Length: 253
Image 1: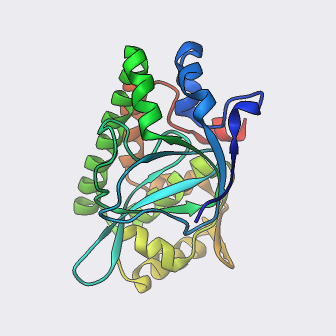
Image 2: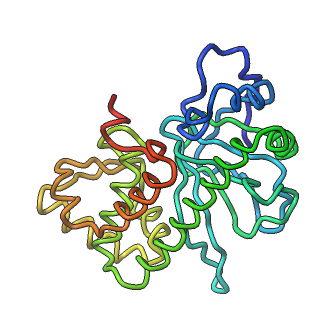
């Protein structure tokens, strides 16, 4: 489980979560005293299917969480990644409803937690705060729609390149802590398929593999091989919550 909880209101700056930083000073002040910082490890469990959704989790910096949909064959298929652009759990549903998927930490690091009850109380006081989280819920729905379409029409090579780029944008550098097995789970395919794609990318000098990670050597070539699903999601974020979706440039800065 996540450990190391402490009150974040003692810190001078806002957490490195773009959604929290997008809030106005007045709206942020409504929830700031209730925010708590935690350090999470990869594979930490946030929710299982059927759990009451009573806490909102905000990934910060390079931290990532993933939604896993269980299937009848026993495999979990990952649907979307959520990084510092967003939040997990009870955004518009007022919480305390059962989680539909399993949600785990993909890349460990700092998170911020907030009770769903505290968030709902703040929304009652501020229409603008409520509107921001409703907008984010719309953006998350767009990610799910795009992921569904991507899985249906794009090749494993395109989807592999897309997932690596998506992780890079949030991680802030060219080193992505993904194994072949984890990448296969992201794509919902067998490990042998992703291994063949990775070997092809390696032969072309696009990336290298290290133990437990992928190092991108030629981001431009990788983007050429990726589908445009990430761009579609970014464009929707820019229309709805401009500046919230992470970019490589912002991460580097």
